[in-house]
Image (cartoon, rainbow, N blue to C red; front, side, top):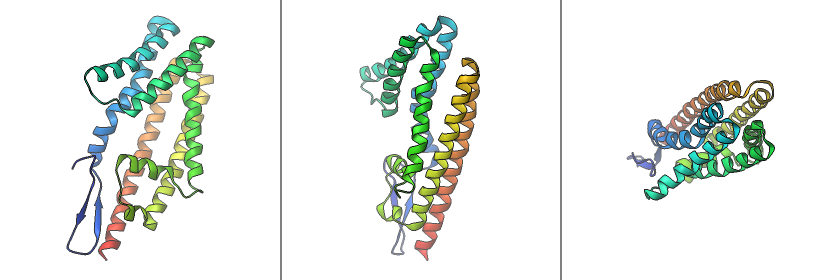
Length: 222
């Protein structure tokens, strides 16, 4: 199934059943930009920090992101939004770290950003405009009739609360380790913990969505 064009499958009964793209297709689409724009700059920064010091690490991280953008422009390939955001974030963080001479500043900004994201997910719930639904529809255009179903609305409200908690725990762990552990320990231990927590949250989200989809389809068929 084409990732960009989720389709409606119509049976003989007078109802439509939404069929989302396969999880493997979503991962193939989302994983490369995430690795390039989020994971790789951290790995490049740490490797250069060990070999070249703070100045070299800042330069290497900036060169990696902008080099990726230039490579795509020269090959006439689209530049992902995640890579553009990474370029903006790395630039601001590198300038602040270079001015202060403190590597902690480089990692403090995204951690505070994570805390802000957590609060945004949380605030979207009482407003009845769950951020999880907005992000899901950005990835996969969902039919309005499907989104209007009570069970679907409740699902996205609960998932928004889940991701608010995930980002809050992420920020708390990151802040504690940033000020109490070495930079090397922060990079690898924190990255592993956050990746594991995120993987569990993704699994819960996907399984919950599939369960919600089955219930909605069953009700429509009945």
